[in-house]
Image (cartoon, rainbow, N blue to C red):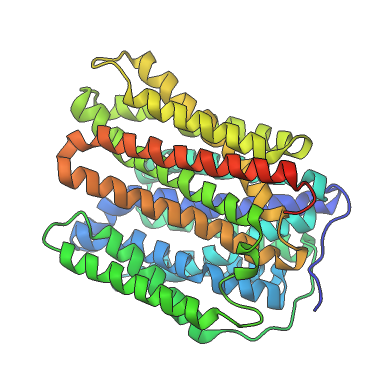
Length: 459
């Protein structure tokens, strides 16, 4: 087996531009995902379709991305990370052109699904590329830059969308990817270091079971909020569990399984994935229900609500690079556990807000949540990237992505259930659940820290 290349020194010269190419691809993918939501009303009107059908413009992208993560991680290890990353950029850029030209909703949905596939190629491989570019003691810096890029592009998304829609049609929201994608393709082809692959067969049956399990789970969770369609949603979730069980049974005993059991047997990877699921679930619950709490319970307007929630992503943007550098110099497990504890504290403080809080009483609690998540995210991702063997960096990126998406799906499901059971009054109870979920993550993080203390050389 040929191991993927790893770095031996900090990025200099062309490698600095290689890092820029990686971050440029990240910026493009996250920006596109965040601006698509803003365009849904305009797209529905222009293509003469119902809003409920227009939502599938987002769903098609997310389902394609989620179902392709593990198969593409395996392909990255087989053909080399650079090749899969470059293919993803080409697919994403070309599908953006197709989205720009799509004359009907079905063609737009197909183009968005193809775009999600391209995004999966890049996002899954990026952690492995960062490990290949940076030396071990500098990986946290790269992960910090990645967190900064994700946070800034997500924050800029609504503003960019509003600016484009004020002077042009919705098609230009996808067209903006074309120049960015072309630049990223050229930079990647010329500057990104290549790496050898490993000979492994492609597991088509496993990939199909993986796609069925994840797609049914996402669709089922999305349907829980509709009372009339809830029986179908529950059936879809049950079928997802059946497909997942079949996938696990099919994968056991395979020398190079699609589901990376070998990595999940590493305690540091397993525990870090668990904390990631809890953190993203808690954050997703808060993101879904806080607007309802602020508008319906606390009487804030829509614009004021947006401003009051802005400190959360804004603080993550600032803290991400700082926590990355800290994790290169100090124990990343302790930093991550401290961040998760701060996030739990911030959520608890939101639960304990006075009945009629001032704007400042809301803002500092929201900012505390952002500080906690920002302090947790980068060190935790660094641990997940570096605890895997170098030749399994692609699979480690797949685990990292799947943990994030599982947490977000779980959080959305819990928020939907609480709002459906209790209406807008369920927002408060949902935040309580978010704090509990995050608190469980703290316990997992402490278990990870204790293990690292007693087994410092055995992940």
